[in-house]
Image 1 (cartoon, rainbow, N blue to C red):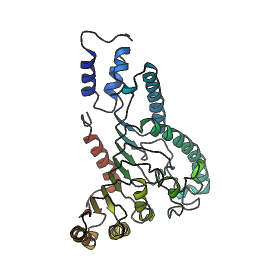
Image 2 (image 1 turned 120 degrees about the vertical axis):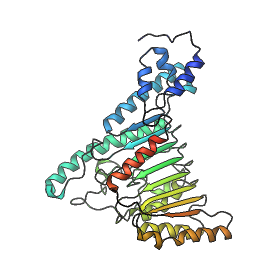
Image 3 (image 1 turned 30 degrees about the vertical axis):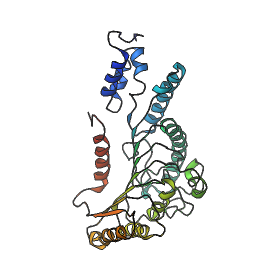
Image 4 (image 1 turned 90 degrees about the vertical axis):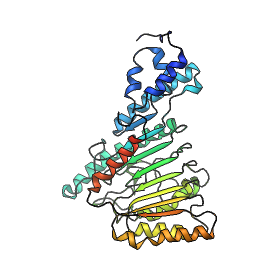
Length: 346
């Protein structure tokens, strides 16, 4: 690799070029960084801005690379030009990630025990890797999308993301939030659970850590896409997000069943308000019949707006019909994430 950057073009112009060029998920930055040492150093604040990761091994590789680039920038005294991640997409879906999916009941107890041993090893690596990743990218991370599946349950990872403003979660929020009386917790086979947390430490009490130092102090937009309509977890965790994100302004709940719609309705009626900074609530129902059943929430918001200076605007949207929801939401959320990149999928 040539050590010098071409001197025929001023360094400030190169910075503008790199800023405009590095608008994909890292391929352009990786290619340019191989041209010369000067390019590699100047690219530091641009090459990792938009990142898409799935397999745990690729996340570990990314963390190692990011740490090396970060350390090199610090050693050069480039405090203002440290590497940064602004938008991050994490996909832990079966077939995309390297975790073993929950075994079929047909495999019996032996199949479950084999899966459990692998799960303990994977969880230990996952928590160690993700804790380090979030610590490295926290200062500039603005938007995060996490795609999950019930077949790949994720362990809890304690983190603080002070700059995060947009968060989208598919299927589950227990990567960031666990409650002591989690209704989804069960004991072992035949229903895999995280009662014993599969090799990782249990999460701390929510009231003890989130209230004192909220992990998402700047979060203003939260999009939850629900999965199993029978899953009771969301009824208790959605209210808990008030402690995690005290500045939340926009809440969107997609594919919502009747219990969740009722729970959100109760939040809107709560006194004092459960989410005092909330401006907008969007509820997309899972079944068409729920649209008429919960349309009154829109009228409630209008009545509240007349009585209170600050009341959220509520919209209840119809169900998405005639689609395979198993693939629809992962594809849609991925498309939405790429659509917000300057270069899209290019």
